[in-house]
Image (cartoon, rainbow, N blue to C red; front, side, top):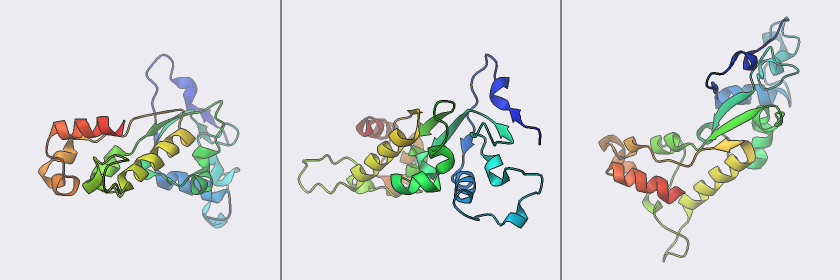
Length: 185
């Protein structure tokens, strides 16, 4: 099968970052450790099987591209589990690929990542400190450091203060979201 290196077509333009979905990463990664996709469902022309869909794999990818975006909002934040469940990203050739790690602020704002909004502003050492929000922040930071070459701060999108979201987040203004983003730093 003829392969194509899409990275070489960038020239002097901005670098496109395809966003790897959690499903896609799982699809490729779990096949490495067993028959996640039944062999009779894989086209006969796929000589590298599902691994050929791993565009970060220069040796076996049917098409390759050396840059990508991956979000903590779709990720397995437990590092030990991530190593296997997200091996497409975690076991990539780090010298020849580059991942921008997204912090998952969108998913926190939407409630996809469970976040302790009532204790958002607390700090270690505060009376009655619970620390659930800090646990999520730390899990995201550890995952970003483990996974990405560069990463973004844990932002709080301005829409988290919209009337439809404010009952859950407790944020009521753009200023609240900005201060929340700064607090996360």
